[in-house]
Length: 234
Image (cartoon, rainbow, N blue to C red):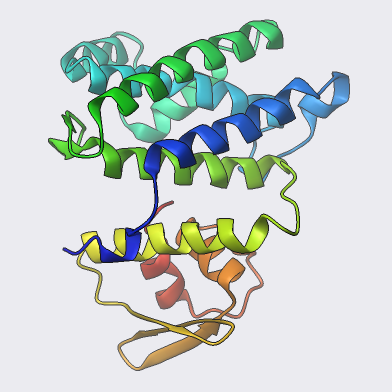
């Protein structure tokens, strides 16, 4: 597995940047803005914030090498899998003042970002998939923040968008390689050519990124087999 496609990316700076983008957006929300639907099925903008706050339990369990403690909490709460965990994180924060949830996320994520940076790119931490380099894990975190930013409509300027999309595409290509995906991805002028078992499609950079996080609209023309194989960061 090669990390060449990631050359030049600073995972910690990217994570900080996406966190700052989310924080600035959340800071400007009032009233009905929190209740707007997001791209996450059944979740409002407020629910996405609750999800982000709740998943810091996992991030800290990894940093503390205490996944057993997290599993014990999940069992106590009747949480059986990742989907249950995500819903539990949202549900248990719905009755809290949104200011409290935002403060929780700022505090806990700030600690995560600080500790990940201290580990450095070659440091190791425990994950559900086993020991994993802190730099690569941080890129996954940054990618997720970017996805959820798009889910809730966080603004991205026209000047920022091309470089941000390029970074996200590179992280996705690495993730496909990491998973030993049979999908062949070739960068072409204006986008990407993806091929699998005789199927092929040209995707714009934005559509390629959306496909890798399972955010393409249902009516997109991409073949279902290609769509399923591309969803590596969903």
